[in-house]
Length: 129
Image 1: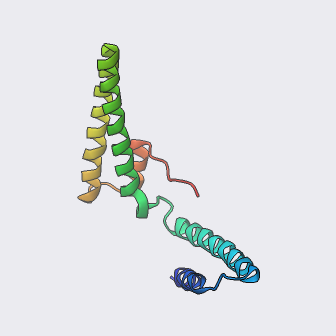
Image 2: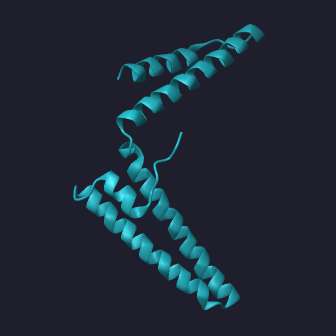
């Protein structure tokens, strides 16, 4: 991708820039802003060619699973601390959801389902810029 290589070249050039004087520091700041804008353009172009964000889907799915796992641990601790079984029920519901997410992840990895299908079924929106 042409934009990708242009971005990489700009980043390498940026890291090689001197920044000792005030003028050099100002130039570094200006270049940093240009690089950030180029990165945003690069990401927008990638999103146009990959609207379901397949490139980041597994990371996002794993993040949801880990977050829910943390929630289960916290709910179990709270149930024990407050002697309230309602928190255990909530933890069990989340555990079932985790199992479903992991099952669907395996289906994706085995090529049985697409990212588009899973985003809809699991209600996982594409992260916005």
